[in-house]
Amino acid sequence: MTKYSVTIYVYGRVQGVGFRYHTYRWAKKNKLVGYVRNRDDGSVKIVACGNDAQIKMLTHWLEQGGPPGAKIDHFQSQFGETEAMNDFSIRH
Image (tube, rainbow, N blue to C red; front, top):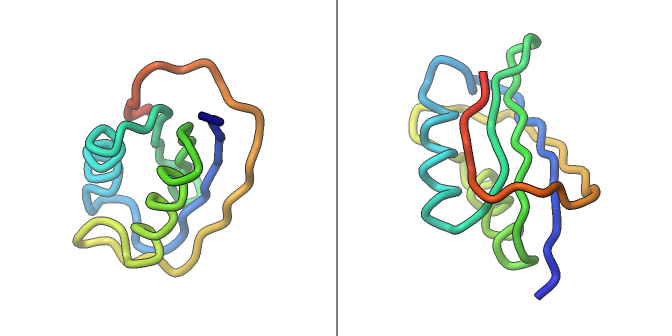
């Protein structure tokens, strides 16, 4: 099964609302590896590695509004090289 890596920058009300924690829990439940971290500009960066279906599910979850309490204005996705990671984490 082909693994993909996607970096997603999420903009809107996404800091201070439990976004990283909920994304972490969602990713673990859906067996993605990677990380989520806040950025200095108020956005959140998600790096996720998984198969095509897992990446599509993540994108769909964000399109549906992501975690409760968040208000996603928009997000940008870019595919890249698959990084060697074996878990999903919250980075600070």
